[in-house]
Amino acid sequence: MVQEETARNLGQCQMETEKHQKKLEVMTKELYRLQASSEKQITELQAQNAEQQARLQTYEKLEQELDDVTMQAAEIDNEEEAERVLFSYGYGANVPTTAKRRLRQSVHLARRLLQLEKQNTLLRRDLERRNTHTGQISEEVSHTGQISEEVSHTGQISEEVTQDRSLRR
Image 1 (cartoon, rainbow, N blue to C red):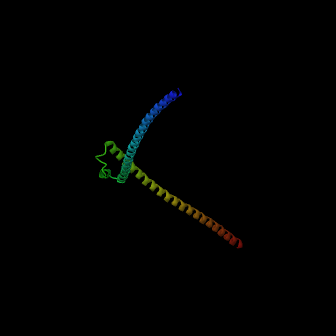
Image 2: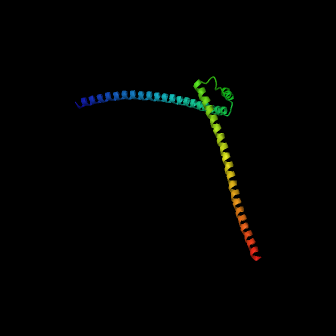
Image 3: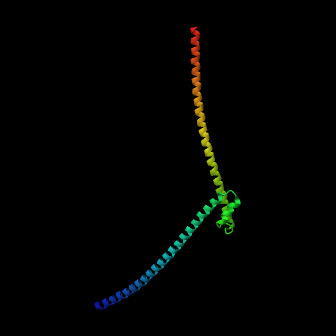
């Protein structure tokens, strides 16, 4: 009886072992499938990221070029000449209307900024000249005050001398 029970337990253990081995095989296959899927997804995401980085760099270069062209056009006072500059860089007929409007607005704002900067520079120079002139006038007033004091003092001395002469006579 012990032998039969041991044989039965051995059979059950062998069946459970086979079940666990099959389950292990299934889990191992699933793990490999998930790893392969993850690696594929990682590779795809890295490729997309590289593509997005390249696009971003392209857009940043375009933006910088557009800024440079806008400032170049803004420095030109003649509106038609400024538009020729934009056309020469390809920012003319190919640009959608709203983008054209934005370019014109950018050029206008850049011109306004340049005008204000020039005006600011002129006002600062004028302020410096006025401050210098005010300093010179202050020095002249001070010098005139000193001369006035000296003349007054000389007048007093002259008066004293005259009085002394009068008294001596």
